[in-house]
Image (cartoon, rainbow, N blue to C red):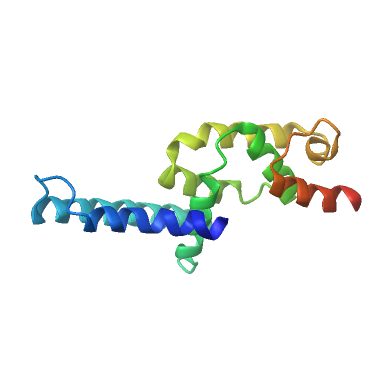
Length: 148
């Protein structure tokens, strides 16, 4: 499923560019759009470099991860995902990806981080009988909670 989402995230812009688009599309507007995309990518890379304190990382993997993360649009989904990850230390890097890939998801992410950080035991958020989890998170929770 993740591979399909990633493929669509990467192919849709390329196919749209090839489709001829609107009649006012010119080489100049295409060049401007490409330049804006390059600038946005450069800004994203710079933010990751600042966070990691290094310039060696797999940017394509981070971009792919952000494409998947953009599918988590509510705070509950983020709370469950972060609680199951066992560590919110990477949340700043995840947030950077969300800011650049799907800024509308950032408030839900921030709320999820706050919920997990406030919990005495984050696993209580996913191991209880009232936990509302996606099917993927439920499978992970079954394993994590059984070995608690």
